[in-house]
Image 1 (cartoon, rainbow, N blue to C red):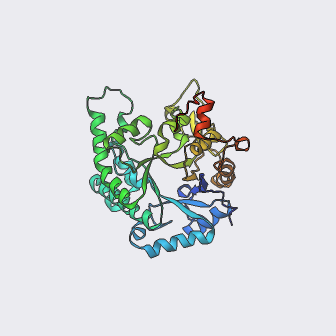
Image 2 (cartoon, one colour; image 1 turned 90 degrees about the vertical axis):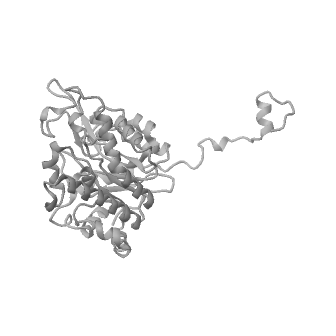
Length: 364
């Protein structure tokens, strides 16, 4: 059973774990019942569920049946965890796919839709609509996804991009996502796009373009994952200062960037182990999580801190086991009073004016 749940109404919730990277055919990774018991045994109190396939849940059934959703919540509660959010990362990827990637991304789609990009896009959009309804039935307030990408082949401006290409790409992306955002708004759920290379929403500037294209839709939020920002050499702490009002989810994932004389940000087509920028298990990389948790707490983030384990060196089981205690050590219970309240002094409008040398009999 998990350790005591470290959460206050005024702070970040956690620790939680994204189950996508742990799915398998052998126990305890072979189904939701075993997975939640395993997660709880490691000290997690929340689980973020992938929705592609039915290993964790049946998305269509969850969208249609409150009884089924209650059963899912009951199964998790019995193990000692909550569902933190649902994820449609892979379906969101298929909302917008450049033809150069059609064959590779077909692997995410049902077999009968492969080779049919228009039908695949419609299926992906329908999946997001189901996810909005399922999230509402489960009582969730945020949802994780990818934006997909029409423009990624043109990420580097060579050859020179024709005028209007970027604008048209974001206009089309907005046309596809606007009805989905409206559905999430109706469900009362924030739609959080993971800012991620390979997506048209891969940094702050591209997220701002998207916001403009969807008229700053109130449900268009950010899934903040500092590992992807570090590998792009962004100021991932300043990112929180700039976009904290739009941060609706948090993946706790570490990374390191060690450029050398052979390769840098682009990686030289090397494997993950050989790339200068690579993902690491929590505490093994360069991300300053003390400052991240402090800034998120400062700005009033009250969502979940969710481990997303991806590491090219450490075994998944070890990374998951270490991750729960790592997150717990970084959680901050927000202060309920000022530290110098013990030395507080009496206050009144008249006294304040007198202290300012304004004791002129004016009443305020």
